[in-house]
Image (cartoon, rainbow, N blue to C red; front, side, top):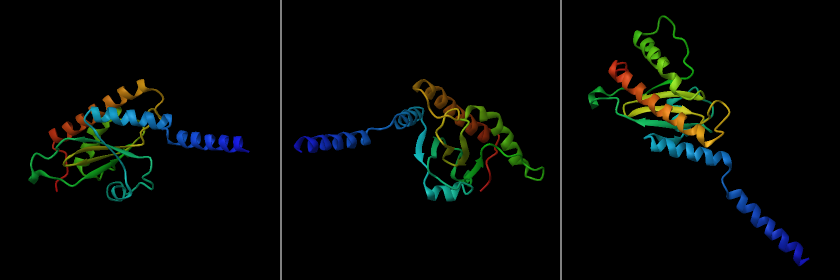
Length: 175
């Protein structure tokens, strides 16, 4: 009887320890986020409040992360503009939409190849550019450490280019 109790206690302790050890997917996401932070991106998980305010078309915020490039898009406080989001993949615009929106989408479309395929949206606000992403690479998730570096490098470069192009072409909405 004493041996059976000892075995059960050992199994319970081992099970508890294994439950606390991060899974392979969690380890890969941690290295993905750590590398993004090394490239100057801020990483946050999307919460319900932010989802309602910035991404009203989303139904569920779980599994989504925000990768933000902190770069001032407004040259001064008087140049500030309201935050605006673009849903990805880009939807075709009707001919009746304003010319600035059409030009913005054309410029953004040129830089989309640098963003991950599983990107959900882009958010532009005076303090930077944010990518809403399911943190998948190639639609099948992160498979190897070697896949992480090129994706994050392209992502950081793509967000940087988008910010510069929008500021240079003065295509940010007026407050």
